[in-house]
Length: 471
Image (tube, rainbow, N blue to C red; front, top):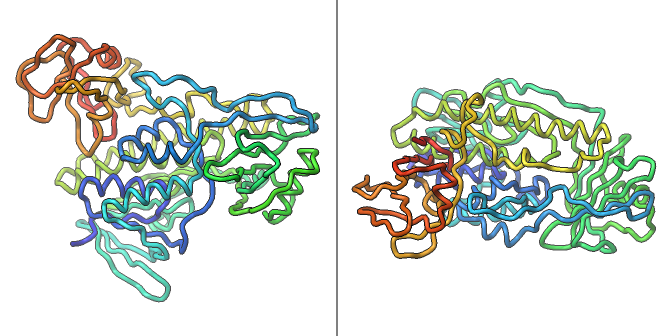
């Protein structure tokens, strides 16, 4: 059997796409030129909308078990403790929004969970396998894969470049990567141990005269490490000694010893958006299509949403309906441009030393992402995220709207209908009502309220959890 979809890149974007395709019984192959899996914390902030995607894909419990809530940050200025604050103030879940708060898990941990889930469908990531080149025609893509000195030619229906900011796929297509790179500002990021610090908290150390110029140490789940972040000056190499120098300078402490540097990188503000996300049978997703500042924790999450948007559309195309493929670029490029604006604005605040630069609001949670016409201000129109709500199934057992959506299908909901319905539809009825076909009971009225529904309302929910129809 030929590989119907070839995915280049085994980061979160490529893994989500492969997982979504595999559960739809679409043959998929995932390659990555790296010889080892990534082992750092980059992309550690998981936004609420991504948690909903993880729920649908069957990995949420593992992610929640492995991660932690956003920690309280203890701020020290000039060596003196000045208070505590959070980037995000936690809020209580609601029936419509079950996962309202961001979650922290190092990217390597997230990727390991996604790989394990993908393996349940018989798909393994092929490390040490580079995409050497490709050609496409009217019926597919012919790609050359290279492992050391060996080469393999494969044929796929579609190729997806999820191969990062230096994407081989994007470069071969000649797609412009529009934006800027600021070489004057560099940030040092790394994963280290700091055993003298209480691992239940995060820390901000800065001078009393410049409170926004300092270092951050944020606890990472699953051990004793912290993610270290600091502005990097000069041409110093990113070593443990350099991180220790920064810790000594800004903390004013002599007992803060850093050890076990397992990952380190130098980041530069790189804000770019691909001119287009599709070229025939080849698509771009994740960092290959857009790169973000780390401010706001948007990059990995936006790539995951790309994959979640593209997977069901590729599956539809492979099952004979190619009409949805053009909507991938029109929907996701617009969103990526908007999210780039959010993360860039937060970066500007940080550079300018604004005191609220570390605060995060609803605009970073990706719950308000919509594929509707921006001029349409009505609640719940096609393109909106479909909310959750608690229900009872036909046997009286608890069930949720998200349970109805889970899986590779479109969901049809008929509110208040009691007659015969299509076999793939659900009637959403009130207590005391009897329905002829498959139905769920809105015992507490949350579903009718969340969907602004009256009797006779019909709702169609896309496989990616966005409304296709509300009438």
